[in-house]
Image 1 (cartoon, one colour):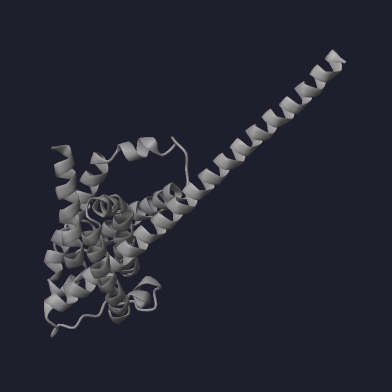
Image 2 (cartoon, rainbow, N blue to C red; image 1 turned 90 degrees about the vertical axis):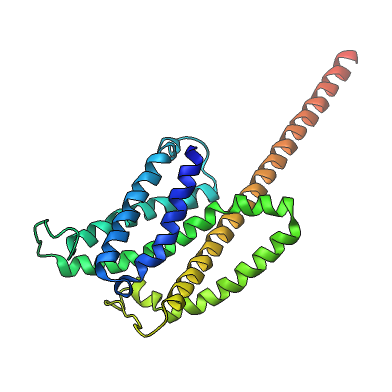
Length: 250
């Protein structure tokens, strides 16, 4: 039951995130409602995964775990500061809060963290789908190849959508206002953002696989070195013991 709730929570968050990025295309009030909903779901997600915090000081840190941990901590910071900055400049749901003279700065932070948060969320999802990919590969390699091919095509288009939608400008504060084409069918907007998310899911999965592969090779190499050292010590011991026996017999 708990796993099902966690899965539903994550799926709803993923579905709502592209809608949140639409901002004025869906209306400011709905944007605030969706943002609040995602923030609540994000808290629920972390409460249900609280064992992750307990496990942080435990176990061995290989390349894959270091990457995941840094990514998750960055995402945590971004997902906390983004709604806080949004609340500070709210025009609908949180107008009962006192106005602070930092609205302009809050808008800049909100815009910056929105686009970085979207990218980091895509990478985060990719790091957690490697297990699903491996299971599909073992169960049906043909279906796995087809799925990877489709995702790669979408990811390649995602590079075009990433540039078309101005992500680099927003992420590196070259563009300080969000621009939308109000005449464009909404489906095109959401399709582009889905492609961008899949692009960074592919990046996350690829990085984790590379780090895990390198980690396994290093462990195997260390294991082989250890075996060679043990073998050498045994051989040296045998030779020394043999000489001692000869001396005693002589």
